[in-house]
Length: 432
View 1 (cartoon, rainbow, N blue to C red):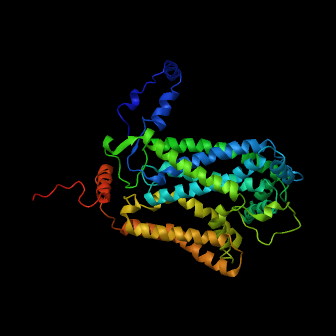
View 2 (spheres, helix red, strand yellow):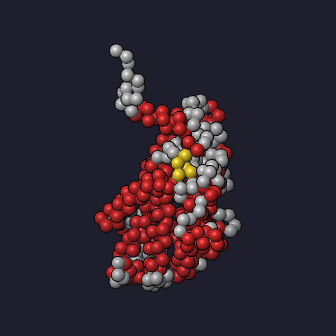
View 3 (cartoon, helix red, strand yellow):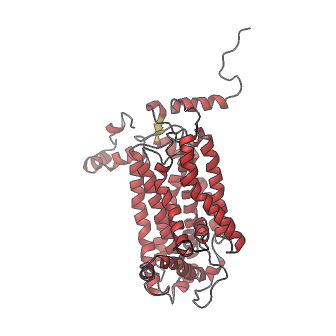
């Protein structure tokens, strides 16, 4: 999918032309994100969230590098070093809150990006590799976020590390050894902080590298679009610049505005108050909960309360939690329908929104106390989560009768424009 002039691009300035001859970076940028990269002409604002995720990662890396200059990965002074950043470092409060709030904003835009891909079928052929690399990025994000949550060394940091790493001990034979290896000892301490700090610093750069692969894989088949119809020709596309750079710029402005409102007016709203209490191994918090973006998976983990067969409940929970994410790897083959977009799959669309509601219920249960009522609701929600992928989707993909697809993107765009036009606009005037 390319324009005829994309391969003939030549910089106009002599210096840029010389650079392009020696190292074709200007040509690469032009053909990747400039006027030489053709994009379907009907992309809506749901396609902004990939760029927003990149912006959120950039904020995390920049603020994280500066925070690392003042942080001490030592159990005796880690909490005090965070307070030092907040109180004594110039603009330290801003950097710390931007990093903490930025993590939540990063997950928000990535979750929306994933839901958009699920709704419009962006995981289907020929974009399976784009989807698989996206799931890898999501797993790396979760690992990075967990390790970062431990670093402030408050009550929730310490006990979160104790509980989450404790789940690995449920693995038969090698589980306890894995837990000791992760922590560097039998309980969270100096070794744990050093390991988590090193990995938390390193993994964002690994994420950035996988994002490059993600974008590279996307450029081979080209972007999906709301109709899910393949590009038929040049009339179905527009250059990425200036059309979508302007659209992404507007989306980025809205994102930064929302980010600033949370950062300046409610920076602790998405956090937990107990993490402003220094870590105390002798005092267990009343409720140990992870950050909000882990709540649905935490609810799945807690849904198993009884041993089944020869496997203890704890191991069932760990396997279910990891399986809930690994299912996404197999989604391109679970859903075998040739139609991509949910716009033309009414049955799939209905069950997609039911599944989305189920995710919200899991999140509500995961962030609530582990009382019998919440556990039971979480068990039903967890059962539906797996049923959606393992039972409902395969049945729908084989039995659903989708609506007729448009012949091309241009036809869908023109039909939509005609539907929005005032009654009679563009119609011939009847003869008197």
